[in-house]
Image (cartoon, rainbow, N blue to C red; front, top):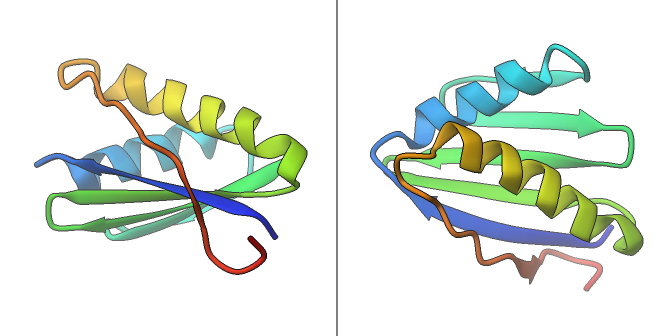
Length: 97
């Protein structure tokens, strides 16, 4: 399945992971710990990893849905991290590229 990955460096990496998962968990299936999370949207998914000050986000789904996944996850992260104004540089990742 095609996927794209972006990273954010922040002292709040784990907090952002948990905020995103809790927020999406009101509407869609979500599993998470302070270090890892999985958000399952109707049109794809996002895995999150917090390792110290690095938050890694990987969206995966049909090629035609990747831009939408990036936007949904990126826009929500921007709302939670507004003090840091994150800029995510999404790159192709994983197998299936």
